[in-house]
Image (tube, rainbow, N blue to C red; front, top):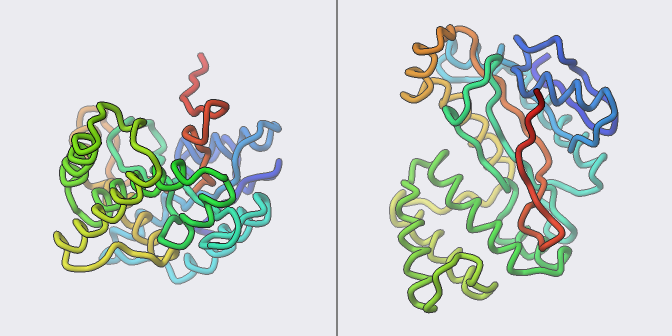
Length: 261
């Protein structure tokens, strides 16, 4: 079993399974079990990470079907479809989750599932084109940097130019049309830097993000942190794919981090 799902009060895993599900995956499963309103998702186990590095960065044959079942479970709970351009599209966050916390050491991707079609569906369903295009430009920047290797400086530079052209100081002062133009500039920059377009297939996006999280287990930051904290390389990391929660859909929305003692 490579994939452990959670959502709607049920979870395949539990809080005792940190070695297999990582700290984040185990706790998300446990919080779901005790009735907290955890957005649905699934965890790809640390064993898949170990397999990935032992087998020339490939995946177990059973992973694809199990992942597809995990996505379908999210769709069923949320009532949204991954890659749907007509309704509210299911968007996901992809995060690492080692068994010991390694804050900021590995990579995260948010708003995955946006493309030129689903962004229109999101704008229409949320009745807020600015929110939709703000989410899309953030996704392109994050995904291009983490997965495609196109330095985030390229996008920060284009954002600064957009603000200068409009004569504003803050990102929030750019409207939907400004952000649409920025998205087009971001995609053109990806094409220019990498000689290929930004991926529009949402399933390709998801595989790319999962690969990037596993690869970030061996990035220089993570290697150094493990040495300092005596965390064995053989533990590997899990990957958590979870339906998105939006902090930028209006003044009635917020995201944050909560700590318990």
